Image (tube, rainbow, N blue to C red):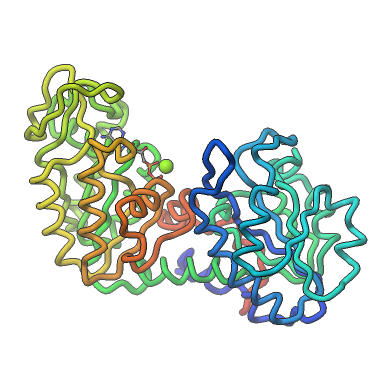
Length: 405
Ligand code: ADP
Ligand code: MG
């Protein structure tokens, strides 16, 4: 059986073709977090795209056109989502002038003029209603301004949009960029040829968003560590009264099934033994640590406790491969961030291959000051999840293949 990762690894990369003198369109993911003044607070995604852009410059592409989305506009112009906010940072990181293109259709001749190595940045592609609808008309128009299409937007590769999917119908040469290949390589190392034991650490808000992941990896992993609100549903399945904690009643049975499946597959499951509880998430007055089965009436479990951190730490320490997806508590709030940050440090400190997926998890790893200490942090939240679930990401699906298979 060919795995999804094997299939995606077999797509052609930009290295496999000749781009000299060609107009290259690169779909990048510049969807970076910004504060209320539109200042970029984390430019990791821009930095991650530099290798592909520099490669195009170094290999004499005739022009390089960068296409991205930013935020969630509703198919029309909105100043706060303009990619103009990205232009300066990109120029600084690239050490090169970047020309901003407001409307690529009316600038078509300029982009096609082929004065060597010019870099164009198009306005937010989601200002066009056709982008999310995967409209063939928009795909065709985008295709008409390039000879080669490079998809390097890993964070958006689980979407079937005009600039990530539809465009491949209309371009002769379509390949993956360096970031896409790097992401696949990293997950391949963790899933296809892992050094055992392999541990999956999951957390986050909901079981429902990660249930497919839990079901699909059960045969691949040795240990499963569950924290965050997700573990509340599991603790509920064990018969504990979780009081006002966030959990999913309709998934209690699912949690029971997961535990049974784990047993069947010889996967050792670790759940919180103690939790941090609070009388209120917004205005906490009473915050304490209690055994997981003793959540007080009216209180919510919002983080894992110190004994749990120790237990989880011991479990991961003996692992050789660790995949982490999902914070252990409401890490955005200082008082409830300890469990997540301590676990981040514990994973980062392991002599193991460590891989982080999930938007909030990557953010938590960064806030814990540990982002340099993991083997790999994925730039994709939803995309990394779908990859772990065993899916072929649409962003890879229609690219040229090395084997032509
Ligand atoms: P990721 O983006 O890494 O996949 P998720 O989106 O699944 O992660 O989950 C992250 C969210 O889960 C965070 O906003 C965090 O506050 C929330 N969360 C984690 N633990 C709890 C909890 N015990 N109670 C309420 N929310 C929680
Ligand atoms: Mg999230």
